[in-house]
Amino acid sequence: PRGLAGALRETFLNISELEHAVVFIDEVEEIAAQRQGEPPSPLQGVTNELLKIIPAFREQPGRLLVCATNFIRALDTAFLRHGRFDYVIPIGLPDEEARTAIWARYIPQEVAADVDIDALVEATDGFSPADVEYAARKASQQALEKAVYSPAYSGADGQQPPVAAGPSTADYLAAIAETRTTVSAEVAQDFREDIERIARL
Image (cartoon, rainbow, N blue to C red; front, top):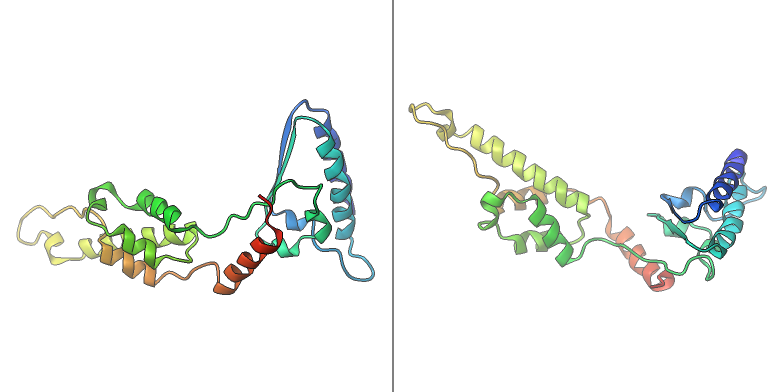
């Protein structure tokens, strides 16, 4: 951790030599965690260094710093003070419009007209994009398995086996029912509270 603070400082010094720069730090809670405890954690030195770096970075023209976290409550309170970041933008679970677009991406064109997307959107309230993708792929897999193992597909009567077009609404709804959401109701509620308390748009 002590070496990380030095590496962080050196990295931003190198960036300062560039004419323009966009810096993206993912999972920023790893280096800007809430400072606490006695004696201080070695990671607190990293947080301290980042808190000093940001104002200096902002003073330079042609610079943009973007940080992302799934655990905004873990961030040091000084990290989110005015003057360090102009915007704190919450990106939560997809709303109805977003889920409609996500479902449209995963439903095969051959069956899209026959699938009740509105029912899928309603049934996936609280789903993350990854949850929707998982349910869509599960439905496709189950529909294929159902078609392959059906008597009609065996070609026992000498006829060419039919080609399965894709999952039905029922297939999707069954897959949705079997999908465990990755974001709990408690975490979603915490996020809504954080939006009220922290968000700056």
